[in-house]
Image (cartoon, rainbow, N blue to C red; front, side):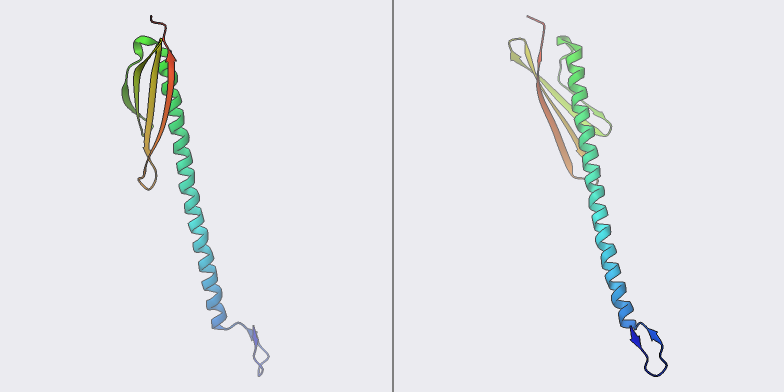
Length: 123
């Protein structure tokens, strides 16, 4: 702040206003970037959770159908592409490989996978 010696009035100069506006603008831009990063992280976290639930749901479904229903396949649920492969692992065991693919906000493709063994009753 400067004081005018002739009139005794106090005020701020145009230069001080410009510097304050530049600092405020830079701060707001940094906050916007942080907010966008947080939104991307929240989307990724949400999609990862949904994909993991889809993996678990399919595994529980395959366990429930028994030996006759243990077949490879694919489907789409909640915007997720889900595939599963069932192979014979011997000794009344079936190996189940389940894979879920999804896209994030930036159209990047991600994959979650799960491998489990299911005991069968057939001899």
